[in-house]
Image 1 (cartoon, rainbow, N blue to C red):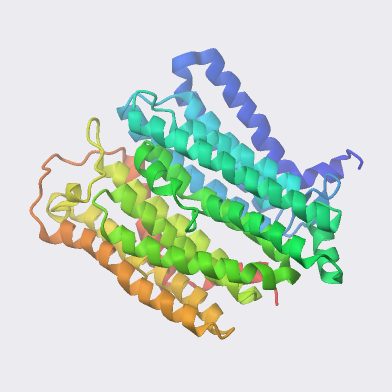
Image 2 (image 1 turned 30 degrees about the vertical axis):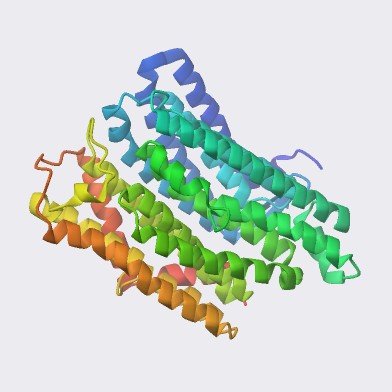
Length: 478
């Protein structure tokens, strides 16, 4: 390996983000309590410039750092999405943090370092690179959940998240070690070549794949590795829940593609059945349990579990069309989830979290515009046309129908119908119940504009889904 500029330019966005994360950390350390505003401004600037750097290098591909880092169309699209989503997430979060005396520079330092971990995961071409990116992302999020130190429920959620996350990381690392023992390499490309050549101990290989799937299932929040997700979503401050619910799901999807599709694509026979179980259980349990929830953050957590089940459908198909459909779904889900939790933040205020479904009673009478935005987001999550959520579900279901997995497609359709119930319940509460809250909704102008743009983007992309679908399809050529 030679440390030449030509080799390092491929990772310029990550190197810039790392340098800026250190600058933000120093600014917070030297400015103290006054450093929060500077940290917020620098974080937004960092994410924006990183997205521009990724955009300017579109079309450039290659391996660097001794084959541990890859730059390709797949990584470019997902890294731009991660940066843009986190720009909006930080914008949504700021008013919430200020109202609860949590507006601290540490939040933004952790957010930038976590984003760096996501980007490393997306561009990983080596098992150790994936693991390093995953740990950088996860450790920052553990600390973010525990930021509200005076909250017992937040501290409890952080402990659960940390312990179960450490267990899952250990499982993933164990699986990687077994794959290394079988193939003699930690390079994803080399593992793929060895598996394709055959002649391996299939029993040991399948044993290693089991542990990899456990690690992936936990990080995505798939059943039966979902235990942490509802507790963390409910217990964490809503600004942190918003961060965890959006971009990290894209990074977890990228990890699944790198490990299972690129590294172990020829061993699909071993991981396909496991993913089918995870997908079906996630759709069933996620949708059924969500019906019983009265806390909207917990309801959206079980909704996330069901959406993860749909994302896994595309991977199950084993086809480029299926992978593109899963990528499309992951991007769309992040957009919808960001809007949903953004609305929770918008309706909350100091001393009031707006995290119970009853808090949304009569919202249409209090503020018809915000009620309409929430309606668009809930309809999209339910998969009702012509919103983008409908096309996301349609594409992943079509991908498994194309490979004759009809029974799973039927389960997915039935679960979509069941899932529509709890989304429609929120709409019923907003439009047909008598309001219990009468305070005027107040929020910064930039947040009001962004939440409106977020919801309208869900509508516009639903009417014109072709460009985003084509972008995802171009990443997985036939």
